Image (cartoon, rainbow, N blue to C red; front, top):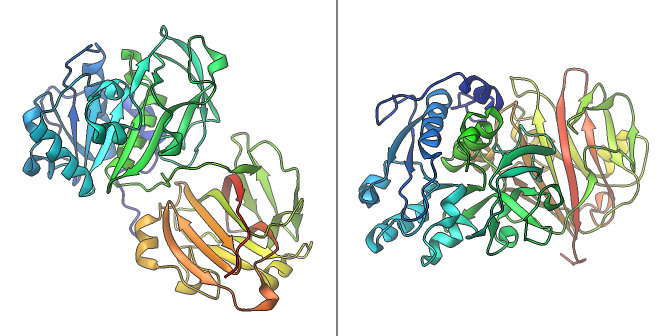
Length: 447
């Protein structure tokens, strides 16, 4: 398991503390770690008066979350040698054509070599004639109504930019409409409820923050940040620093496009679920299920599944990383949790165990690719996302968007072709939380 001595341990806590800080006057913040961010705020069109507040906020976020910040409006900074110094570039309310052809080529190469991009607000109102940038940003600005309150619907609560948010977020900003919907190309983190304000024109599907893996690099965009007040808001600052930490590669997230899933557990109801064996799960106000006691199993009894992709978010509570749980698949209906153990397969959650029994393993049968697992795994206290895909007798596992296991069953007693799924509550000393369990049924296929 990789070290948990990271740049940040709690995005929300950092943001709350940041509200009291003021930005340094110098052009470069004091280095606090080996991650480095360039804030670029050149404008060739409308200029937001919130840009100085945004730069100051990113400096403060860097000082407390452990990354060094430089800021510039000089397009000459976009050279191959200079860009190599940075783990991410923040386009902070840039507008119009801000880079020349040579500078564009340097930035394209930087992204292809694994660089990070953060677009804030008017970054979507930038470089309309540069297709690479349009793909990187995810969508171009079209129009906006007046500044007003709106309801932001948080779609992904595992990504570090949104993991601290409730399922809805009430805030005031200038809400952009976009020329295209990025949902098919990017992973939408949050969207606007167009019924909560006036002037939205995206027909009820209105992404406002998203992330993606783009041409070898990492990209995060948020439509918030028009107002000066945004950068003094601890919640928006937590959202912004989470996006930056993802872009610099310090925290991992599944940023593949997601469509066609339906909820099995959406945080409000356990309809269709049943507890087998001792122990239980508690349902918190924030829509999180946390294991208690055991060894038992909370299983989805309403139906079984034969060919599907199930996604869910999970988090260990203890600082040691020694909490134990797992996701069971392919077992017959039973109120005996040992039926799942003997007739199904467990995708394990316990990063301190031996290879065939550690996080990402098919417990007792196949270890995860530990090198990939360690690089993808977020530490205790932070959310991770599993995708478990069952097709025929093949079981594959993705952790935060990285494939870490590929297993094929050959035991007819444990056939994956038809079965239920469940969440384990392992024991009194193990506290693991789950939320946002969703499933997409896939066409049946052979092996």
